[in-house]
Image (cartoon, rainbow, N blue to C red):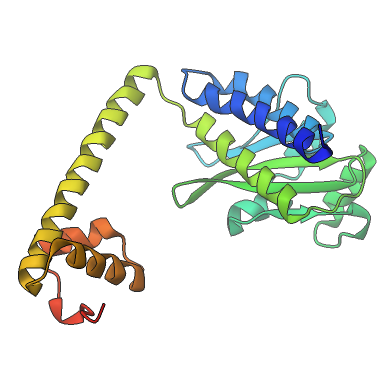
Length: 244
């Protein structure tokens, strides 16, 4: 087995376990230890925590039971002044590759070094378009966070967000049924819009569909939005490029 394939297996297996957990009625308290182990085994993190904003706007620190107590104290002392808070406000990953060189959060960097953390990486947890928390990884040595590393951290943060948003099986079944019906309605509306466009432009449905796809793509518009405007009669046909 090559080093590359071995690394892929180390990543795929824990990701598969976490993903499988998402389709069951699993509690976040059971998923968090799996997230922590993945960050340790695959991303070489010394410690991992989830910093979230509860419905009342209070920042909470969540860790697996086996995590170090000094990690919780560090985060609770610096909930508003660290990579986690910056990642939430910017909705981008924020990292300190070497706390000894950091002058953005000097008090945090000093406290982190005192308990043995030399590098920090925080990925935003985003629900829809709203930040709800941050996945924070801590390292015992200065660490360079390359593109692949950052991509995996963000993927784990996204899965962690999904895990926090889990509903009961019944609620998810109802939601699934609703989304299936909505997707079906969108498909019917799209086909209706293509038929309207074909008639309006005196062309076949294949060319009409191609024109609508091109218009949606060129104008940064969702195809469902375009279809709705056509079927409800609000679409301005003068803006459609018919040169395709």
